[in-house]
Image (cartoon, rainbow, N blue to C red; front, side, top):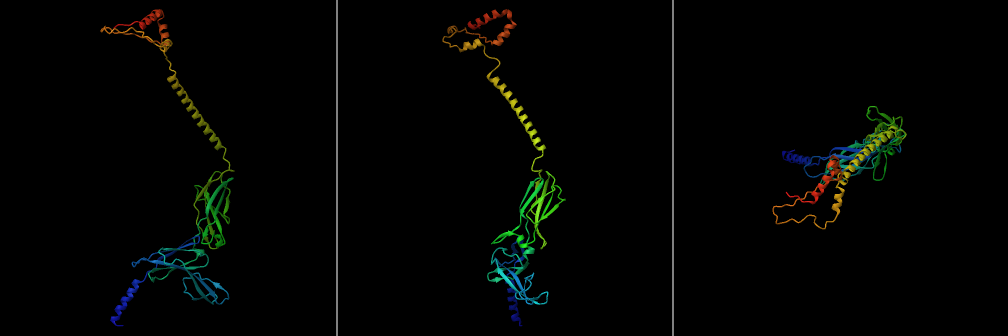
Length: 369
């Protein structure tokens, strides 16, 4: 080849390599309870925004040496469409790929696959930019073996007669048409209940059952036990995820022990006594304050009350002479209560009559100062 042609051809080849759309990276499957989500990472590409398309392929193989026989290879991604391999008996097995497009030119980096239960599948994804496409990136996927069995749902624990009744629901799978228990797909199915006394998680007891209900017996009364439940399928040697830990206290025939109501009664009696004492103390103080305000110990003399209750029509005092500038009218009034008067009379019994007359004179006569 002449040097004139080698340069342009090399440039075209380099341009074609550089312009090729890169395939998706890190293709993986996230499958829980047969909800399959194919995920991938976008490749590094500076030409623009990429879109993605996915498909799945199931390989149907026919053994030509056995009439009306059908086989399925475990890895449909290994052989190309229409290829043949040797079966264990030495005859040729002809394989045909049955594929189905799913997500088409989506900007998302994931795609949900539904309706894949049995057999083995080849899941593929590729990139698009305008009319250019990348190579397919494929992974092998076997739903029965690769899907994750989730924990049982609706775990309920009830105490009854010193036992614990444990009920739960089977892990479910959902698609466009139905919602059913995973045991309908796997066939063989077991539940494992792990329980232990709270605070002693190292001593775990295990009970297995095929039903979604089990009673834990031989438990200590009024003791808290914690438990978890998981599902498994023996034929496929798959064990599901554990439920969150649930703790419940056992009872004794559903009745409270005798000391609990006795203690509650004693506490109630103490509270009532305290409230009664406080109420009585407040009542006594309130009565004393009320008596002090409305019924005082010292009161006005009876004759003074009678005098004050009478209507005064004329002034009892003579008029003041305005011409006598140097004189000042002064009246001395002595008010004695009955109790004080009795006390005074008992101390000076010899002068009772004289002081009474003097008090009356002071009350009616003016005093000049």
